[in-house]
Image: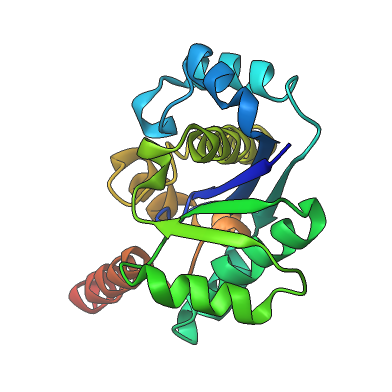
Length: 215
């Protein structure tokens, strides 16, 4: 019985909060069951739908794992221009822990051959690897991983909001509430902010300009 592992991430783009990389593994024969539960790319589901499906898919297997990567670690890799490799190295951890027969990865790079090559060269076990762009739309097992990653990311954002008693929106740069929260509460939020993001650089430039205008 072949077991298939899907891997995806959530939260690569936000300026606030962690990135989550998740792996979901199931017997090949059960993949149709994932479809019947409504599994699809997490971005195509509402939060309630994701939570409901999450609760169902984790009952089907104990072979799932997620890794939460904090903003400061993300910054470290971004400054080195190695963000993709941060993802790959954590994917490798998931693969080596679960030990599937086959892995399907939602590739963060257009050059999927390079992704496969890097992971194979750094894995301690021999596994069949498929890496495709937008694999979360094509393979239910990757869609399941994307749902787990997104649900965990959403919960982490909720924890930040509750801890700080602050509306930070979704954490994405396109969210006006997020930008407003950073501008007005930077010192409170600094442990959760990705300093390497262009959003922060723009805000700092605006602040400097305002100070100069005031002077």
